[in-house]
Image 1: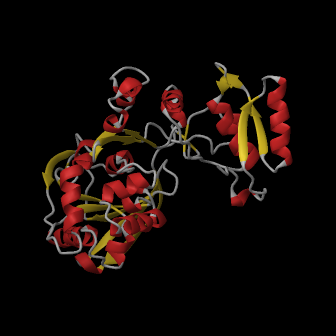
Image 2: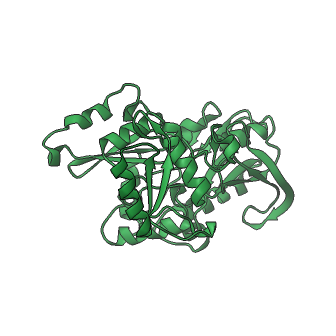
Length: 351
């Protein structure tokens, strides 16, 4: 596939990656392909194959690409499992019925090193007769300069970078009829900001009411009935109005469970064709949920809260915010004809 980026200013050409060694006829074929407009990119070999790390670095440096989508079978999957730090998102479909049994793909399912199930945060779900395994084994680190190519990075930032306060102000918030603190934090995740709306004195507080809310333009701003995000946000603001203190963490950049607004709308198109919210994300090459909540926990710790009363229906948030989350309060949702299937899918497949 074409790996050049439009922003690089370089012509978009079909690109072929190959090792720098090989028989004479290999280079004759390469020359013929080059004459037909194919860009040949030579990279070092590792165990007789293209070195994945060198290949990704060259794709970035020579073509201006910061990420590529790789499609392949068991050999390609296994090679990336040996270097999970090179992989930002992984989706693998195992089709035992079609294949007449698991066969060699069973090796990918063993709970041993360099197997799918050994990677933290990998999940699985049935899709018809198939099994889909998905997750984010690591985060890309190829956005730094070439001198730092071997240093793990989080979307261009060092793993050592912490969630940091960027700006703050006081603001009267009509929805909760109170003067509040508004603090904006930068996080290690590219494109993500955490906006903390703080009512009252929360430093040293116990069982502070908290809602961690992922940005949802369609639900929060437009009032879309395809999800329950808007009602949950407004419901928690109503709770804050009644409480003397509390915190809303609004996660900008986590639209569509982390895939972004453009991809979320594409997922909506697939849902209109019959896929549910999870299968739509998977069909676009994304995991069912790309969000993580470690930075939210860091913000709460920086604000000095001792424990929280967490308003959520998401067990992933509860787990991520332990041991701060001492009490969990579900937010009631009233289904409608537009979101009942969506809510059932979240309940049945995302717990």
